[in-house]
Length: 306
Image (cartoon, rainbow, N blue to C red; front, side):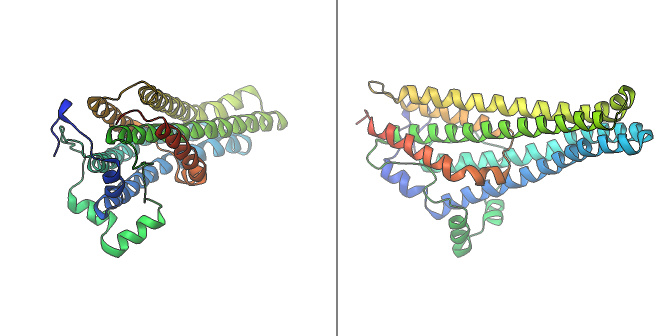
């Protein structure tokens, strides 16, 4: 077992390639995937409420102008529930999932566990979530969890870890940027529809403000903050990916301690980043994985460390 700090020495790339496909590693991967999915469920409930308010407020303003006060009260109440109970449940599950994913990385990269993660579930909880034996193997194959990281056995251990870390950061960056784009398109389209519909029915300014703008405003501000957080998370991952890539350039030498620093940064980003919807992740997965493997092959081709 490696020691902390500069004494850390990664295993061989061939060993990491084998370790990431072992049952215990697949168990951790499957557990973190399902825990993230539960976090996304809480997020989905929160955003369904936001969208229902955004859809119903303009309709009610047209057909039941007197309901503006009630709709505004409901919008404010849902904003409170979303930012308190639902956000707490989502963040708690995200922290558990991030800790499990960190345990997977530490196992594959043979990294020291210098800090005890209080959010890490017990081994029994992980087994309960992911299962064991044939059920685990079947689920891992269905979820395409084998060969999680693009590891070239010909690379040195140090370079293999750095490439895997960079791939993880860049992959998440692409997903987050796609999520931002999706939300901007949806928000822009809905805003246009609301304004056009208000003009068509000749809604007066007072009714528009009380029945449409004010009830939707809390949900709109929540959505704006969510999009801003996603954009910031994508930028942070892009910065990390570029930093790692610069150290992988010809003539540069990656030091073992840098891998530990990057790993800690990855953990912080995973623990705090907004969630990407599962359907969007699945839709973009093949394209993103092709890009990830292509860049990993390029970086492997310029290897410098012995």
